[in-house]
Length: 178
Length: 293
Picture 1: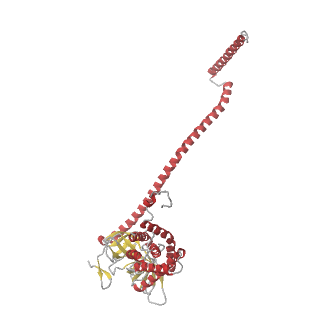
Picture 2: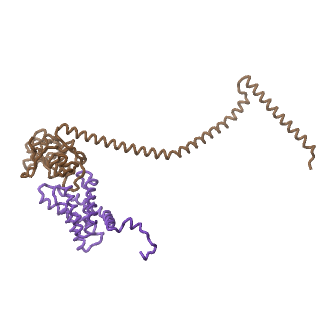
Picture 3: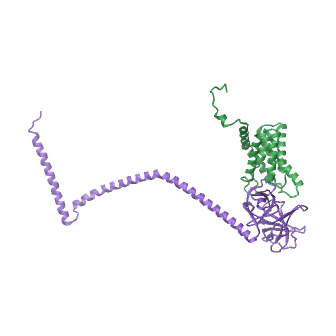
């Protein structure tokens, strides 16, 4: 249920990013929601289930964007592994510092993938632009807090911690028995 | 105890006074009547009375009018809120209608332009709509709502009423991805309409093209029209691509640096036409070739 739920949520985010948040084909200020999902899965969930979610999402992205198949799965998985590594090995684990780390890892992974593609791809790419990429990283950071709240809420709904039945349950009035 | 005899004369006097008053009034009335009937004019007394009563009437009349107006205002005030709500709803409806009309007009103009383009070129075309845009900053492509089932195949040219938009990059049964002509990986055979000189037009990723392989010996001016050459067979000959916006002559090298402004407004792309030209995939060259008729 967790995998299906988060995969569907990822598809919804991809749909939003490629339609509503892309004002025109040259629009640069479209927030990369998928990377926030990558960060959420890296910080909160296990490797196995997260990769099962991220790989097909990357394939979907490949179909909708770009000319090189396999680029997005690589970007998503690389981003996930990097964030997972940082979350478990870096001494700073407070959420306040984790948010900028998401932006930094987004930049790093994007740059690595871009460098790789520049060598691997026959067709040239749009030149790398630091202002644009910094703006995109800023947008990822801005979206992190609200989207993490949404993901947390969604996760609790999936796990059944918040359900309408739970809310409607009759209470006995005895606080100690509950 | 009161005496009975003392009450009687007082009562008589009162009756006499009453008779006297009635007699006086009747006499006066008679005098008024006679004087009025005779000359048919107001006498001084009439005039005096008239002047005295007039202001009173005036005051009462104005008071009544004010009261009536106040009542009317109150009644109006009661209904004005409802009226206001109704008018606001009507205004909203009118605004929505006006917006829809404007939108319909714009769509009509756009589609008319597409239809004209289709009629002028005389090529078989499939109308398509953009349903998604590439969110990446490194590529320039869009997704359209037509696919292999509609006759769309890889390599077909995509145009709109203004000119060339791009080329079909990948196809599924119902959808297709279009590589925009402004993408850095896009290249087209073109000719300068004025001088008939051939060149290769490449995308830059931004809203300009780069025209390569134009020799320095050739006269190229800003404003020169650039159209498709039709050599590769993918794009029909003579489709508008853009206008030369900048010509740079460098000391070194054989070729000019020419910038071309696209004829198509890539920021407002909506409806497209896919040129249905039969193409075969050339495996060796990794490209597409048109089928000879």
